[in-house]
Length: 325
Image (cartoon, rainbow, N blue to C red):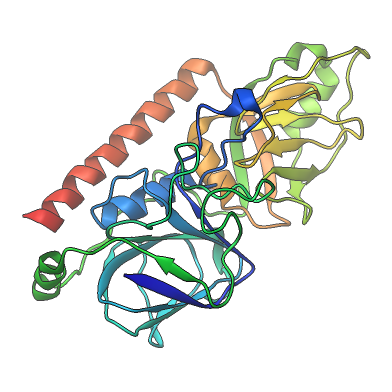
């Protein structure tokens, strides 16, 4: 089974939940920018939640299906159509052979995810199917998908398709407690390693002002524009490990938030760390979006993370019952 790419869109790549275990060799994690949407798309079609999905950015792709299959679309709203009819999001969709799925421009959020029942049948590279664009590994030939590509997907359970067609899929999942699509957003953060190297005035500058997401932002990092932040003292900082959501302050004082394709180490001072639970919402911001930072404690961040994971697990349990009972 496969899908044919009729139009590539702005940037569409294959991503799973990331390539872990190789950062010590300088190989980045990559993975879906909005991991909640990617995981939920897989859950909706009965896949392992860590399976690969298509990640579509800002302006969508167009696909043709060569067999009947089951898919789900989550994340941002791109006004997707299937054979000219608007496709519902956040629910399983039965797709017929030769159907055309078309994504338009994003009207809410910035990234959409497509999961196919049976997964995307591309090989693992260092334990992951995620596309690492700068190294040309993973995904489909190590690059963004292009017009004319034939992307292999796993086989769909025909009995499952027949059962869903018979019972009519008239439900969807509630994602609102997990992901926010507002373009004026409060992002919660922990203190970074060098937080106390900044004086009170510069800490307040970060926490009391809005920052604009610039058009120079990408999967590697979000560059922000706003009141500059400076160090209380100049000092030499050795490069050390960074992660998804690390907030660095470069010499120009404009914060950079490291994202899914971040480098493995960084040498800029780290004033903060976006909490894990807010990374999917952060990933859905469009250029010119407004960000305000709010400091929370580690205990608060852990509580929010656990609550979200429990919510996803409850969704998984309910969907499994609907699909297989």
